[in-house]
Length: 348
Image (cartoon, rainbow, N blue to C red; front, top):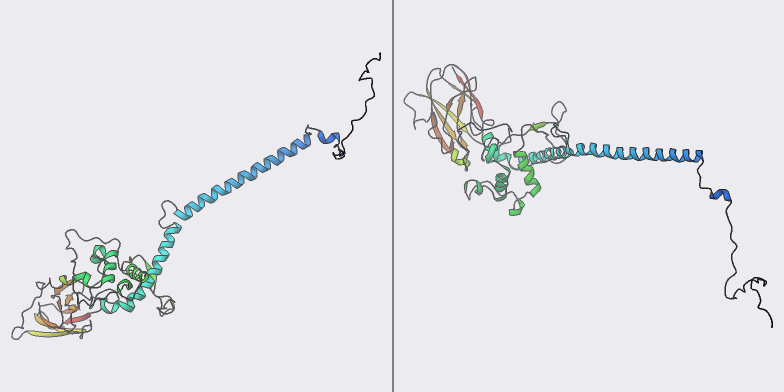
């Protein structure tokens, strides 16, 4: 009977590889020095230096971003306590000047012939009056007048004030309407350049410098306590003055000195008048401007009015009874058109 074979004593033969499997790949092993986990002092110091430098670079980058954000914040919104220091305020101010300059040219081309070159009035009402600009001539009111015409002011369907907005058939678009409003409402603290309407280049004065002008409105103006409000209809103020000082009789008294004065095209025909010393005289004022209000105001050398005649619409004639005045030189003007209509009265 044969004994069983001891497996361990048997010669171990390599396992037979199936023919379907690929041949094994030879493996390569790195040298032992490549697998060292310990750091040398030199390598540790190098890593520390690199980490420190990286932290400094990160800190400086963050610091730069923080400083940039703070500086841009104040640049954009302005510095506390410094007016108009923000980028937005500067841009708004620059755009306002540009709008006012464009509005000036529009006013000169379309409005000055009725309202006067300086807004002093003429065929149309005065625009540069501070009491009006204070509350009456607000942006919305001016917008309404330019949109629907003069009928909005006094309810007069035959008003000479036309429609200006192109939304109602007028010639001006919404930007030009806003330019006109900005010009009329411009404060006297704003200085703008007068430009040629065709080239937009500055108009130069005799010295070669650009001509400039300032707005009409005084931002610090406030009506006196108890002041009469500006009437809704500007012509109401013209019919409310027959009782003004100097209301004269229809005809001069016999032997009374008569001084004649005419007005036409919003100008006094005579700019130099004379009358006797300490003698009352009759001032016959002929207003030949149809539907345009005029009167005569006489001022002494200090600018104080010594006589104010009633305002009335032309064509018509008014006899003013002017009281006796001492010898001297007096200025006279129209209260409705104080800059366009002026003259000198000599009492001798």
